[in-house]
Length: 545
Image 1 (cartoon, rainbow, N blue to C red):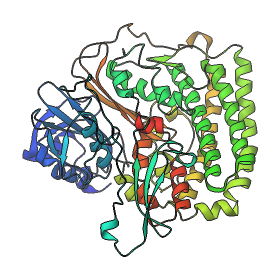
Image 2 (cartoon, rainbow, N blue to C red):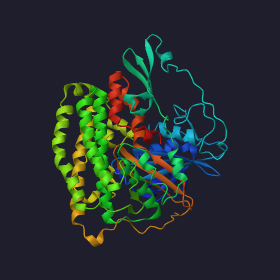
Image 3 (cartoon, helix red, strand yellow):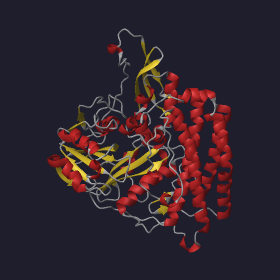
């Protein structure tokens, strides 16, 4: 860390850096909050990035109060995510206009578009000021105070214009729709693609087809009982416990709840089982994407994923929508007989190394797979950071960032395991990272099983003593995140003193990772675009929420 960054370690030093652009301080439980004017956004964020080292825009949250609109830029450092800052930008209700942060952080592109779409805040100078989740013809902004929910909506069809045609009059370009219903899009994703010959020259991921108002449903649910079932439905392909942990960490921070050590070990074991199941699915579907491997590898990965799902079903009672975590711990103890459960887990772990060898024989050493993946979908590390990319996608570009190690939670800091990175920056490297992470997750699970087997019978506390009705202090705000299977999954919560959140914002790793697709695919061919999209391992339920 440079000397300049070291000078800005304290809250007072950051306030001094902002100087007379600082209007007031704001209390956030996880990070110092700095309130600034709407026309100072770029200058303040540029100083915080260059002088104080905040090179990650983790999340952009828009919200509306009775007397103002507000944008919150949640900043972190890739080198140390425990160093956080919140830049709060209030705007008037009659003219909610703020300067865009996009020239400083590319992650602000999609983040601000979502704030405009749902809340109604406009961002002056934004390069692509359109809606992102709702149709462009939608009337009103659903999270603004003056939104009329009873107003009829008419969504019209529009013709697709070639966005680059005026600049390429002499070239033979073609506009190509990929999706929204296409096997290679991994869900209802519409990729608007412009080709010059066979080369991708422009690309626009069109999301929102699976937007289900998850944040708004959480805002109507009670902290204690009604929110926890929702996270399973974000990344719904095996990552349920990881999603639940993101909400649990934020709510437990807000309500100052300390989770018993025994429950933390169970959480850690369950989360890593989910990570393995998720990576198995990612590997199998990716092989299907890039060289049509259905009969062997796709079925092999699903075979092993099913074994993990059986273990998770024994633990939680469900196969996908687990709803197993509770604020303060987990719903119940390990299944009885415990010896049989431990034996099933160990059998899977004992067989896994041979299966990983099989995968390497069929995938990483496959000549067709290498031709399709090596040196395609290149994502430079600094570009990845600018988009807020995390998880295996970032680590495949050499970005050494993992919240389990860098912002420890659960029982991770007490276990022996390694963060996996690769420097290839391409589709091949992202596959290597996921395959190696399966092995690291197995190490974590084995250590958790060892601990749970020897845990004293009279100290198996699965939940803290949590009040039946939780009402955090009015005005309390926090942003907390976990290392989900696909990257940093974060939750911002603002309390109004009742038993339901006033604002609930989901920071989706898939949303941020997908926003970088154009950087990876432009200048390459359509098959490379399909491989790049598959290498991101997105789930549209989490992208759209």
